[in-house]
Each structure stands twice: as C-alpha cells, then as structure tokens.
Length: 213
Image 1 (cartoon, rainbow, N blue to C red):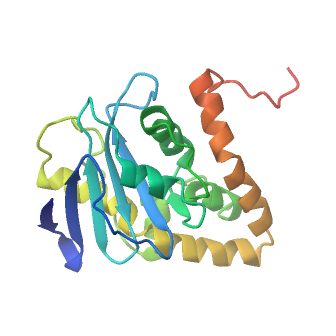
Image 2: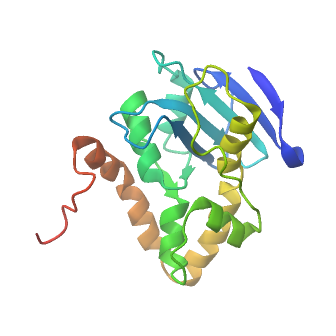
C-alpha cells in the first residue's frame, strides 16, 4: 500500500489488486472506476476508487490478469452497504464484466440530479459538484492512460476527487428529492440499474426495449 497526501487534508491510499482487510464503510461507499475507454466489452477496468466520505480515498489498481479482489467483491455485494456512484450504469456494468459481481444496493447521483435539477441539462459530476458544493473539479486527467503501471500524482488526485464529495452530494440531492416528492421514484430507478447494466453487456445498450417501435 502506498499513501499519498492530497489537497485540503484529504488522503489517497493506493492498493494493488484489492482493498485491505478490515475496511468499514458505515455510511455507504462512494465508488468510481477508471478504464481504458467507455466500452465495457472492449476496454478493461484499470482502477476502482472508493471513499467513506471521510476525506480518504482508497484506490485499487488492477493488473490486466488479476481481478480476484475478494475484499472488494464482498463489499460490492454487501446488502447493508449503499454504493454511491455518479452515472452508476457504466460503473455497475464494468464491475460486472471484470469482477463478475452484481453491485447492489446502488445510489446514482446523476439519476437523482436529473430527477430534481430539471432547471438545467448539465448533470455531469463537475457541474453538480460546483452547484451543490461550490467545489471546482479538474477534469484534465479524464483522458489519460489508466493502464499505466505507475499512475501519476495528477491521475491519483483526479481519481480521488471523483468520489470524495459523493456523500455530500447525495445528502443535498436527497433533500431535493424529498422536497419534490420524488424519493420513491429515484429508489425505483436505482433498483433497476443492475438490470440496465446487464442489458448493456448483453447488447442492448443503444436499444430502448420499452419503446413502441
């Protein structure tokens, strides 16, 4: 394990292949992934980053031939731990493809944003974080080589930033969902995400099976 100090008293802990034993996520775990591209059938999973919402980010870096990760698999399928994503559809699919797990339960801040921030069409993590938390996220490392054997400090900070604020974003979006009477609808959407990911992996990523045509 390598430890990297991050900005504003946050910390980044880098792990090879799996999470260490004994990590607890009592208030849910914020998760994001970094891949070689956006096609889960072609582009491999390189990094999974996780946070307890306490300012510490745990980054798991995968070798191309080792996705055993028993501790991470156990966490992803723990029914008592909420998994918080932004655009969970992709992350749930890539984790299914490479770790062979059905991630559940799931909370997606992008879906929640679309259900309550109907006054805008800007639902990317950078825009949501800026409006709800007043924090500017840098996206300079979004397109970089995540399969590199050694990740740069800039890559590590970028990856960490994508999860360190998700707990706070969830809290603010929940207030808005409750205010607008859309919490139950949001939960039903979240519950469908594992099936939506399965459809993507099975070849229906561009087909709306609910449409008339």
